[in-house]
Length: 373
Image 1 (tube, helix red, strand yellow):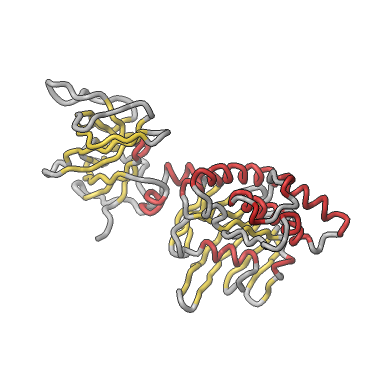
Image 2 (image 1 turned 90 degrees about the vertical axis):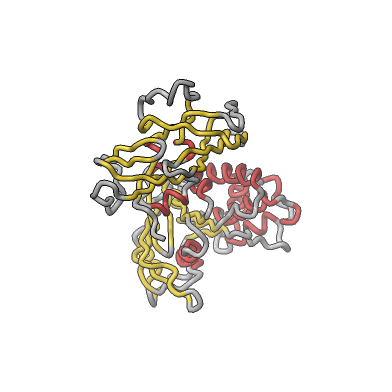
């Protein structure tokens, strides 16, 4: 079934309004990540969907049927919504099998055992049915919580920061396992996270929230490659900030120019030549090329690289496993230096003080008006 939120508003006395007219829908089998900074209303939206908070304004529907509106609430146990909490909320005095059975109180007794073992098999823990929660690793406890949520066969599954308490190495494995389980289950899923990489890994679509509203909704590629605002661009990953000037429909920066064309952000840009702009450039969009020749600047660059590039000095070079991070200093054209980061394939090594040519990939550059002080 699909779940839909229409014009949801919610306030707390001590915090004020945390959801401000939010509308969102998740289709059957779709994984939607609610991404955003702490306090933007992500968990509140899940709690409203689960019936753990009374709805103050708006409407929540499941499969087209209203389950919550002001003054009328379907009880949480009758909604068909599964919830995996951040702390897993396992009962320490119950075995793994009994923890999973807790959500099956309304299932006929003859079917419970089969449903329990089916849920545990989905998460690869059927051999741990008689174990106690304290005997399990953090990743195994998370999978038990997921099995307990899936056992009643909910119409919608909600996960609230379900991987936050795991260490980095284990988090990657558990996320991967969970993604496969959710795809096989084929139910609408809402996942709350503040980790942009996690959202891009897990989600079919991302709803990036800010101050109780959805800043941008779309696929991970939509948000990463086509951010609608400076907030979206910076939240989805590291950016280099380049000062720029508008000239004849182009943004001129110290390392090249960008033909604006259809790349204008919502609201457009100042129309007069000479207006200040800001270019946000992803580290993988800063291309490090051949060293400049002794006789002059580097030769013009072809393809989709913007402008003719610039000469940069290497400040540091660090291998980060899958990529190499290079710190570069580039003249800003006003007597100062810009400190930029570039991500290169592993195996490329540059020495401190080495001179290189740099240019930017216009497909990884986003132009905005200068940020207000």
